[in-house]
Image (cartoon, rainbow, N blue to C red):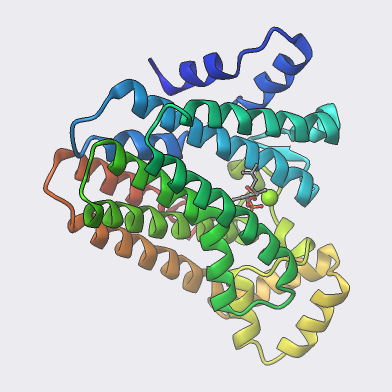
Length: 305
Ligand code: FPP
Ligand code: MG
């Protein structure tokens, strides 16, 4: 059974109003995290039903976090559709996120304790990362890597580790899978941040230039503030809130200083680190599939540079 089918079956409810919210919440998406669980479990013998359940649970947690994230960010578009809270209101949206979250734990309940520990640790990290992003008014690159690690890479890493646990890999091999997922997740978020600044809204399925407008300083902007002779003036403007024209001006100035190329290079570096971790695992046909998936993460950059 496809993950999408397990997902639909797991969340199904006789309540038509809730079902309507769920249908919207489950529309679209690439299913990257469940794919990681399924692929990583192929390093050994596993119970396919259990693997599918864990993969589905991880996707449900991701979907719940996006619903909550859009409320926190005040975002209006997700996956080229109106954000759930814009269509149905904040309270029903938050509760739908909670419902998905509870459904995820229902699926995890019949899996191994190590899976549960791994996933709960990742969720705690996600919450902490979101708080750090809010409170780090002027983060440096180190703080940026900490919060993107927590909010994004932690769940990628957990997905990969869970695959390894479910096929009974030894702990050091689970650690390599977790490391692969961690670097892949960092690259994924760096690219998301790159596209928010330099990409096209249409391709992304959500409005761009949102991070700066919300005062969130991502890697290309941090690089710009490191290099620009007018950094102090820009920092002041960012603190009081940028106008749309100022955002465009900053983006042009950041391009002049090659902050776009720098950010792309850092994402590529993370993919290299992910592939190095993958190389440490026992030779298996699944390695190639994971390597391909990791390299493809960089594709959106090629479309722009
Ligand atoms: C998207 O980041 C958001 C995340 C990666 C994590 C959000 C996590 C939480 C809200 C806390 C955990 C909550 C639950 C229910 C598990 P972004 O805003 O940079 O990306 P975007 O552009 O796609 O919105
Ligand atoms: Mg967001």
